[in-house]
Image (cartoon, rainbow, N blue to C red):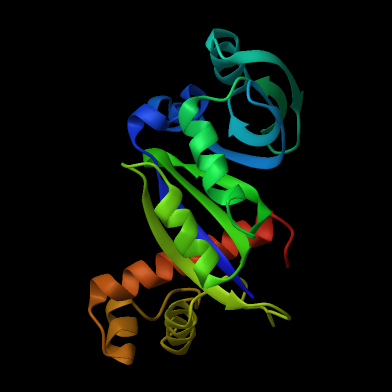
Length: 218
């Protein structure tokens, strides 16, 4: 059994109006699904943590026809916590069914990002992940961002071997020194890979570490 970090890009037609706000409005930055309960074909209860302007976000909640009721609570550092009862769309049900057709266990949060992307960590087997990919509707694109073994992470939460090697190389060349001594090109030379590849590995590693820190996983 392993831990998989999966990124799913949804076509525009499948995106919930509240998630499209991340692209459509500069005052909405991030949305994380913390808990959920599917109570039937026509009802779903959800809890989100959102980084957004409250007035903009609440206006969108009121204007979204599928939302039956909601409660919005102020958090810290500009965060909002949302409890909402929504009517799932057909694409919502297909996405949910793709995961429940396997023995995968989802580990919150599910993070919604610009461009119709969401990331989710799941526990299970590679065969289970393959089943999810097969079950997703046409138009959904899936990328496996990280695979780690179950058990102690010794501070390397959710990073692939390549990402860990890139972060280690960045440390060696002084990329994290203040002032910065090394560059992305130096990291690429250290690893013998293209500069663009080194930059991509480093950005993904830093994003994973930042999300892990914010979620309290270390």
